[in-house]
Length: 204
Image (tube, rainbow, N blue to C red; front, top):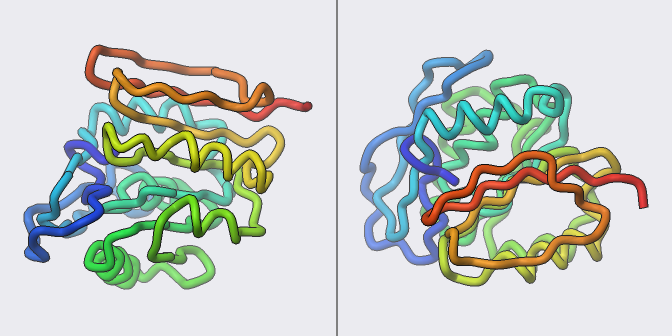
């Protein structure tokens, strides 16, 4: 998900740790702030247009939400949520260099440790140990790595999505996954290249 503006990639191996550009927060208390991102393999920044579309979808759900950015990369979605008055964001990222940059950007924005936490490691393994429940979850893994099925299963088994909470899933248009019956599709945008869907957890 971090396309033109967002994600410093969910790359699992950085080829370089040099700064290669920046992401821009488009609305809220950090509006207009630019955050440096690393030049890492698999970089897929989110365009401002796509991010604007997503957060229009999320308008009823962001305020005071407990958020999870499970393949954080640059953290563009998690930072955007915090800017728009989310209560907190847990960033999960595999690449250690990217984790360090996320931590630096949290400090750059003067976000407290109560509002933003970064965990380094594989998403499925870390989420299997999580006890916190989230109101808003972002799943935007590297394309064509088949990472979604295990993570979705873990989120369901661990009951990590709160009742009434929403989960955004973005992947290559050719990828497939299944979601629990209690996750109701409420928004989607599809193309040959990208599938973007928003689900809401309904009562079981």
